[in-house]
Length: 70
Length: 397
Image 1 (cartoon, chains in turn brown, cyan):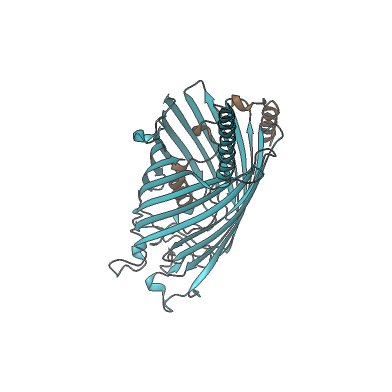
Image 2 (image 1 turned 45 degrees about the vertical axis):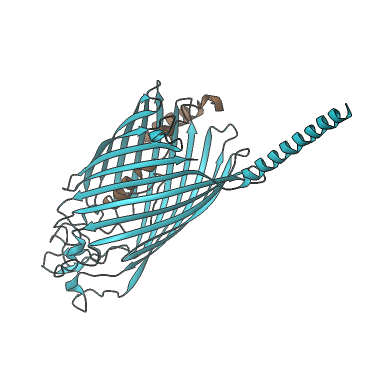
């Protein structure tokens, strides 16, 4: 419990110390490989992982539907 | 002189007319839908193992899957200069499965030995850059021999005033229909279980919430939380379960499952050449399964247009409360499964990718914006292993 509180405080402290980044300063953040999500090339990997593993979700992908029977 | 003046005035009016026409054309063009990008993703997947659920937790899990999807993204600006995006996606998978052939081992090949799945979808979104808002929705369909799924979703997002943070909410519904194809020896009244006939439904409802935040010029993070409820026939009708008394039954699982995955992503651009993409997820559900997922991918930019991306992913899960291996289930239980996808295991997934995005386009074709190749090897602590190769080709308008 104490660990969770410490992690929470660290995260909040980190986020409140965020800098304002202007549009012209976002060249690195806008790089195609900096995208905060799954890339298109990972599509089938995510699909087989959701079928072969019990956990799914929290990855901005599909969280239901489909059989995954085989 | 008079002629010259008239000629100059005529030319001036002509020029005005020409430019005013151009402006009209330009604003008209902006409101027309145009192709923004086309994405083609193809993958080849192959797996093997010796814990097939169809044969009660023993037997070959050999499977191959050839997957192709084509997405066309169209954009336009509306009268209020809001960006509208339409996306049309069609996917086609063809797979062969050795275990499906054991639903009826007497036949040369059963109905599900090889199958094709088709999954089209369409989505729409509208972004107001001034207000920092976006909303949209989509519809999807997936169909194969014994399974159909219809999905719908709505989403909305709002950026903070300084555009450093963004909150997104997405609601999804999937209405699935499964044909009840039982193992051959349990059909036609041969089973002691009260088996249903025809088909049954399986519905999924989810709410996905996320907060993404720019921390500085090199670091951005996001927090993800999903709430997922599944209801209906959540077992698979052709999965056998062998009991300690030698009897065989069809897998039986509860008709409700609630899942909570919580995720965190952080992407960091170090120097001018390295990008670190990290991800962690904790997952828990009402069937007693808990899981941890952690991954790290490093993109190494050999030049602004070429990069290499080695990656590693670790995954660990506990078993569901109703799992037991082949012939270890005691009679008298309400729910039971020998599906090793729901057993306790750890897995490692590692490989690498290469990305080309030359300024003059792939093979000198300007609109072929980028090509990405990726290979991954997956190994699970309970014998399953697989390989996957994927390619992504992007056409940019």
